Length: 296
Image 1 (tube, rainbow, N blue to C red):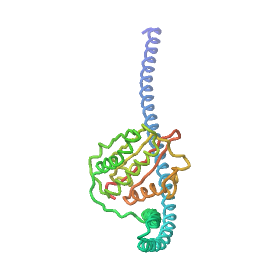
Image 2: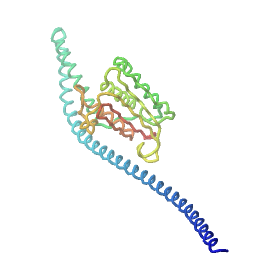
Image 3: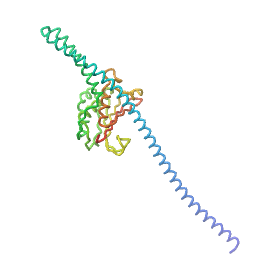
């Protein structure tokens, strides 16, 4: 073999080794690239989990603060209600006696009826106070939640039609029953629908969605089955500074109303061992989210 042939053979061997090494390097690069991609995905999942955990902790903190406020105000309201009801009962008794004594005087009897109407209004307001301060009496049984939501919507149909509000139901996924108080939950859903009607302009849209879920962030306890019901509207929204107070008693963003409606709703949901939250966008629109375990 000549010197020239040896050089060519050495060069060919070097090229072959280079090609082999290049292939191995390419394989290593692809493997390393896959590992880096996997690590990035795992890091993204962990970051998302941490973010959800932080959101959940903040939500639970707000819930605890809200419960503390409700308990304090509830105790004060209960004392006021009982103190007012005693003299109110005496006034009602004397009004009844006056009515009997002035049966022949139609004008004064009419005045007494006005007083009686005022007393009835005060008694109703006090009853609402006592209902709010006490834990609602529940009658738990197996109920069809889909049916309860549909019935609540039917009760509000006149107001929905009056303002030409489009009510969209997305609750067909509710196929199983839950344990709950049918009357109490119907009242809760009706209250949330009526709230949306008040906030919506004519020809607005109300969307009611429901789904069955399992998991801590989507139900009340990890691993337990539950249901999420959302009431979303494209109305005027709720000011950001009001969101943390919206379930407080006597707090209202409306020009009329006692401010007890959502506080009573909150108590009813808590009686079911559930959770209610509210979100509202800067450009309007509000979403109330109710989370209920299938078995309280």
